[in-house]
Length: 142
Image 1 (cartoon, helix red, strand yellow):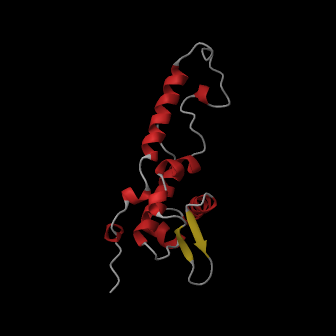
Image 2 (cartoon, helix red, strand yellow):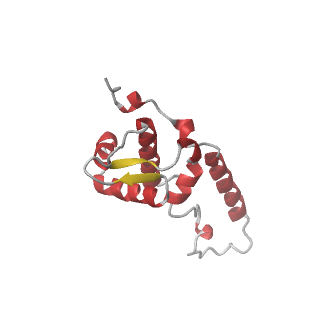
Image 3 (tube, one colour):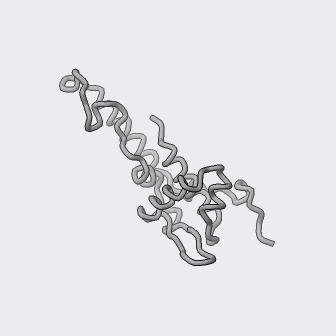
C-alpha cells in the first residue's frame, strides 16, 4: 500500500507546524521549504483545517498553527482524513467487476492487513515524531 502524495504532504505540514511550536507558519514558507506547489499545498492545508488539525489565523501577521496539542493528533486520524479511499484492490471499492468476489477470501485478508496498518498509525501521535526546528533549517531566535 502506498499513501497518496496528499497524505504525505499533510503529514509534512503538521511536522513542520509542530516543530515551530507557538510560531505561526505560512503556506508560502512551507511550500518553499518542501519544494511543493503552493496551490497544491493550499488544498492540503484546507483539508487539515476542515479536519481540525490546523487552525488558520487571518490577518497581516496571520498563518497556521496546530489546532490541537501534538499528543492528541494521531497519525491514523490524519491518514483517514486525507486518503480518498482505502480500496487496496478492486473488490474493496464500489466499482467491483471481479468474477471471483463471491468466493474469494482475499478481501478479508487485505481488510485485516489494512486494519493493522491503520492501528499501527493510531499508536503514534505527532508528538512522537517531533523534529527539532534545526532539522528544517530553522535557526533559533537570537
